[in-house]
Amino acid sequence: MSISRRKFLGWVGAAGLSTTFGKPASAATNQHFAGYPDSFAILHDTTLCVGCRSCEAACNKVNDLPQPDTPFTDLSVLETSRRTTTKAFTVVNKYDRPEKSGPPVFYKKQCNHCLEPACASACFVRAFTKTKTGAVVYDASVCVGCRYCMIACPFEIPTYEYDQALTPRIRKCTMCHPRVIEGKLPGCVEACPMEALSFGKREDMIKIARERFRKYPDRYVNHIYGEHEMGGTSWLYVSGAPFKELGMREDLGIKPAPELTAGALSSVPIIVGLWPVLLAGIYAVSKRKEKIAQTEQEQAVASVLDTDRSEPSQPEEES
Ligand code: SF4
Ligand code: SF4
Ligand code: SF4
Image 1 (cartoon, rainbow, N blue to C red):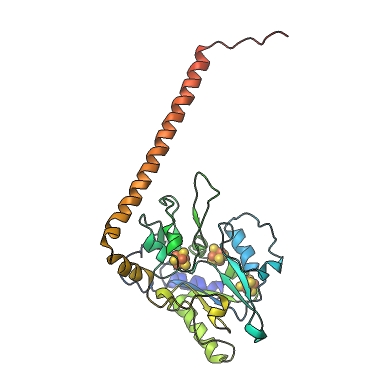
Image 2 (image 1 turned 135 degrees about the horizontal axis):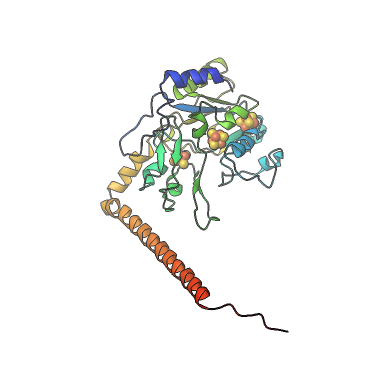
């Protein structure tokens, strides 16, 4: 990592953020939001990445995720393009350059922590919050499982625990918000042996990227992916190959998602008015069903207990 821990802690203190990180402010409105000043970002320099998967292993550890079937030391998984899952908040994929025009490029994928997150603007119960650290955090306790965030995300990131019948959650990279507010580096940044991941203030990450372009113009495409895409993101990328060769969308434009959503939805005002009402109705019905089921279950248990108490136990039949 190119940003030292001491320097990072200095920034936290200087910005006066350490005491405010725990009080997230919602950024999910339809007004343009240029990002919190002093918020953090992670820069992935794909020219330094060797596809070792140490970041994947670290992410698994700090998030207490189940061990994968294939160990992190097995690099054969790089031959297949992977998506993030409920059990892998980040994956590294390998991209061969066309006609062997250069060495393969490794690109680490996870939630980009948009400055104006589409997931947050699509969520009517406000389960997502853009915090002052830069992280977009999710609150499972208010989520109703509508999965609109999954549809809204232009990067196809949120995943849903379909296998959890009782308490399914949306799962994604947290930008290690719990660690950052404790003054620690994100797990993946700390683990990267190649310093391909740098963590610090977003504006400084952009300066570092530009400085690398200036110093090594032949090594990079002159574009910081995430500086402006979809209004900007808190994960930033630099590369020696065009980003579309890495499967990254270059058609997103620079308008933030809430602005786009507002424009699209304002042409169908009935949806704006009724959609939250309908979803709230579905939620209320399902909650009522749960309540009825719980009451019925309690009554059934009480009735069995009553029966047990009133009926003397039968003696075992003699054989
Ligand atoms: S740990 Fe660093 S070098 Fe290894 S795959 Fe992740 S980003 Fe690339
Ligand atoms: S990448 Fe997707 S899930 Fe992550 S903050 Fe942006 S819209 Fe939300
Ligand atoms: S920032 Fe944290 S949660 Fe996100 S990929 Fe890195 S280790 Fe995983």
